[in-house]
Amino acid sequence: MSRETLVVGCGVSGLTTAIRLLEAGHRVRILTRELPFRATSGVAPAIWHPYRAFPEEKVVPWAGRTLEVLYEMAEDPGSGVSMLTMLELFEVLPEPEPAWIGLLRTGRRATPEELPVGFGAAYVLEIPRIETPVYLPWLLRRFEELGGALEQRPEGVRDLAELRGLTGSDRLVVNCTGLGARELTGDREVYPIRGQIVRVSQTGLTSAVADEEGPLSVAYVIPRDRDVILGGTAERDEWDLTPDPAVTEEIRGKAERLKPEVSGARVLEVKVGLRPGRTEVRVEREELAGTNGAPGGPVIHNYGHGGAGYTLSWGCAEEVVRLARG
Image (cartoon, rainbow, N blue to C red):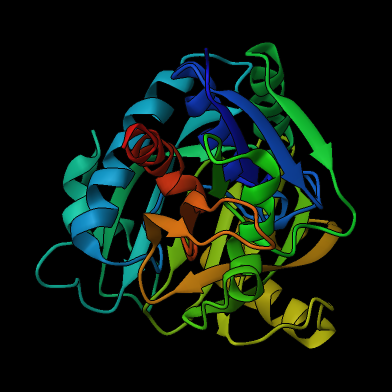
């Protein structure tokens, strides 16, 4: 008989984890307060890039596995995944070279002719781009086609130990609650990284540019099929989800310096999301004690991906499946 598993959270990590568990023979039900389109995963510009996720020795293999999956998905036009050329700007290139660059099929140093004024160095990267309005529904359909069930709980889940007791000692709970894990598990290593983005009309842009360490950091321009995402911010321990008009103008000004082509673009939307930062990504198994006479049992945690939720999603999901076998 297949094992019943509850996945708490329906962002990109929860969905990919649920899919891999279904493929491994589990019966999976997702419990969520928000649908993925309304969660942080729906705000993200969503490219493959191991941004603000630690430790490197775990993140690089997880990112590499996810990259393999995204390369395969890029061959399916219905998945929302495609390849994008991005110029990653620096004043001086980091030494040593980031280990994750070696995972890419195309990753090289930019020539002087490719550099914008004011920047001394850059990498030219060909990376997967994920169109979230297409990709998240595609994942949800795949989850349902595999036999998964989704239960929306407006009040959320407040106690993993109680949830374990409700499911029975032979069942499994997987915690993919992102920033919500701070309160759900009492994990004070989890913190918000506030990100504001501006979505503008597409002006014929086909390549991306990002400055994450240089004079304009954090700034990026990421074109999608029907729009362009301008960003952004990375404010640690900021919880406010209200867009700041002054930040919007700052984002637009930086974007126009990086890509003058967006100067005439029409603003479609301004959004704020809270990335789930943590000192280290937490993918591990924990044995919980029972409550109110109910038996305890295993909970597997999968959260704290920082700005790399999409980048680590499939690698971490497969790690959860391995832990579930234990």
